[in-house]
Length: 156
Image: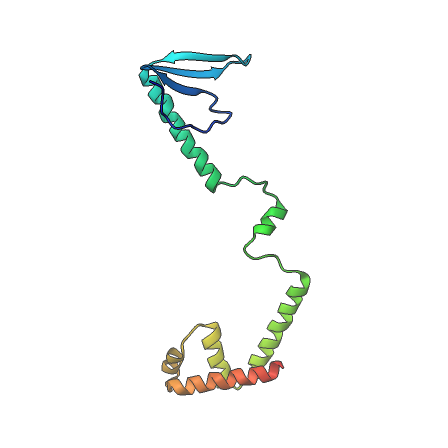
């Protein structure tokens, strides 16, 4: 009876082949001179080799699917970076826009400035700001809307 085991992947660390013929178990491999050797082994050793092959196959599949296999260097890391490094032009433009935004905020009336900062930079809701300042939700909404309009005008 010929062995019906599925084919297993071979690599340089697994150069042997297991087989079963008429109730006898064999391991075959090429020796140092390249001559194919076939040795009869016990069922217990056969099962141990078979188990090892399965574990090895799982490891090889994990390696293929999940572990890094490309050459890691500065160029490949930059290509895969979540945020690509900005060029000097983008950095200067961002700094200029940030400076303009700060100037626009500073030119707002005190109440609008405070509410814009609380809403956009501190992450408070209109309701939280209204509660903190003991005023209505609508007053905060109108104040922030007016501040946004003033800032847009300033930034044009």
